[in-house]
Amino acid sequence: MNTQIQQYLQHIRFQGTLKPSIQLLGQLQTRHLLTIPYENLDVALKHSISFAIPDLFHKMIIEQRGGNCFELNILFSWLLRELGFSVTNRYAQFWRNVTENTPPEEIPMHQLLVVNDAGQSYITDVGVGALAPCKPVPLIAGYQHREGRELYKIEYDEANGWMLFEQMKHHWRLLYSFHDDANDAKFAPRLSKQKNKIAMIRTPYGRHTMFNNEFRIYEGHSLTTYTTQTDEEWLRALQRFFHISLHQ
Image (cartoon, rainbow, N blue to C red; front, side, top):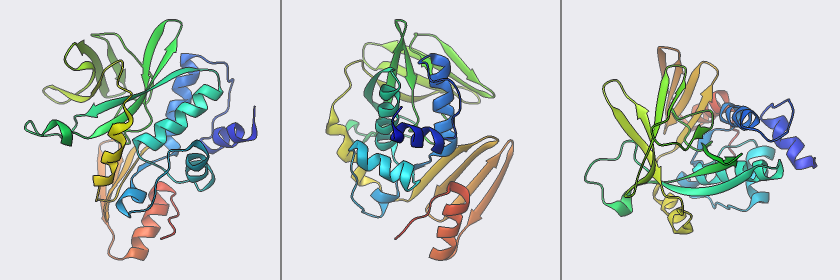
């Protein structure tokens, strides 16, 4: 095992056997989601972004930052390949909170990973940040995947390809959809349209979210909202809730 892989695993606090398996994949995915946040601060602050592995490694493992879905899943896919997994990067359309009349070219794009194990394909995804599966989900039409109080299901049709739904109170809501050949990198530049500062991370008891200067702490059924008033206070909250030290 090379030094970078050791640093990566140490950063996400993983300990255990590294023989490729769906069990290992789930453990790595969960540890990743609990350690490395989704955040778009470089985009929102108009800093440059690189998708090169050395740059992503330095940002997320050495500087202990987070990233957007492209950054997170590109780096995670590198880790998985280095550990011997069969991984394919896929581009998806992200439907959560999209209004019905949104033009196709304005639907947010997402990147996820498909891992093949013993002839079965699974979605693994560390790039959503908010509620989404923390474990691999088999690509089987009609399959339902439960994690605690969260329930998801997989469906497939020719028009939309594979679809991941999340159960709401009274209906199923489409989270994202993708086709088996959805690997077109032309989707990536849409990231530049993001203007609001966003961060999200899972915790053992819930999740933390940030939207500009508003921080929300979800623990079980409780919600605490915290609004910062100054840049210094915002930077302290960013460190406290996401362990991000941002040098502006």
